[in-house]
Image 1 (cartoon, rainbow, N blue to C red):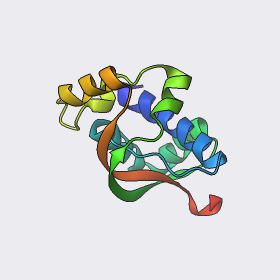
Image 2: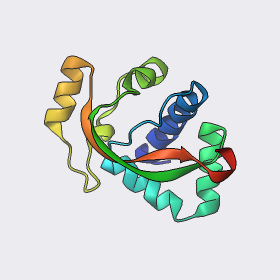
Image 3: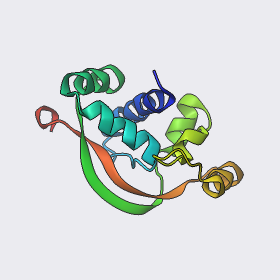
Image 4: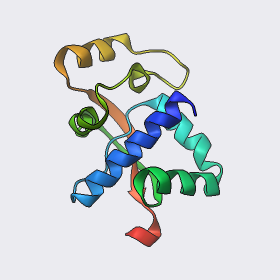
Length: 124
């Protein structure tokens, strides 16, 4: 499993916890991890199995854009430790060193996103 898919699995686990707590969908701010999500989604059966394994349910990819603090970072850190550098990596493999340094200094992430997970139609 690639680093991107491993992190996507953790992201889906956090997603399920947020949904179960009545919270909003987490923001997908890493274009590297989002690119892996798009590749996974090209195989609907693999995508369904992956989301069920990591979130306990099927999830879909939903367009949702914004910019601001990433609300789920604390939940990730409590479960898995600090965010690894892949979260600050673009789809082309370039690392946003300034954003990573700011996170390491402050413990906060402020970023842009253009998608989030959503429950599948059967789970709404």
